[in-house]
Amino acid sequence: GAGVSQSPSNKVTEKGKDVELRCDPISGHTALYWYRQSLGQGLEFLIYFQGNSAPDKSGLPSDRFSAERTGGSVSTLTIQRTQQEDSAVYLCASSPRQGNNSPLHFGNGTRLTVT
Amino acid sequence: DQQVKQNSPSLSVQEGRISILNCDYTNSMFDYFLWYKKYPAEGPTFLISISSIKDKNEDGRFTVFLNKSAKHLSLHIVPSQPGDSAVYFCAASAVNRDDKIIFGKGTRLHILP
Image (cartoon, rainbow over the protein chains, first blue to last red):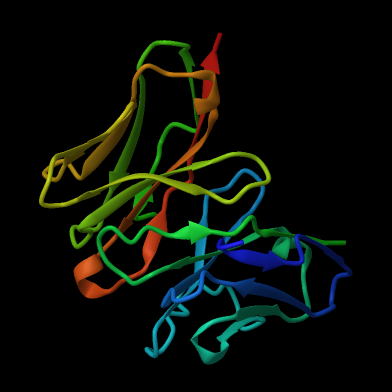
């Protein structure tokens, strides 16, 4: 499997709990993105990692959201004290580098439901 | 502040006819534009892109047109096929600034038999 892998595919959690979502990008891809898609909405940018540069966190909706990318590969998106409005599909994408002819390759997402 | 706008939430087109999906943007620094297609329960897949130095890019049944002065791009699909029914996302980036890719809200395309 050479694609972007996300786990879990589905997650149901109680309001107030913390959750961790994992993304395994395509090997060698230096750029990694997290987006989320709420019901009936478009793809909302959350955070962008590019190589060793400081991540662009400008899309994170609150300080309950954080993300790490260890060793330039696997990334984890953490949501603390989840709220019902956090329910969405969280999509991870990677690309070989930022630039023309380097489109994003998406995983199938993690569907998060906060009850 | 929505930098990439897809003003039509949905579009229905007869099979065999041309589908035209529209996208507007506000950031004049954008220099790279992409279209993605998404089926339910799957991640978006890349369709076609265009650099700001061009005004047209064609790949099989898919053509993207860019009008920089109007900050407008469109995706043409001809002829439309049943498998084209999906949500289409327009996206843009300021590549020369190593900036992130911003997506629109998407347009759901229904191909009618």
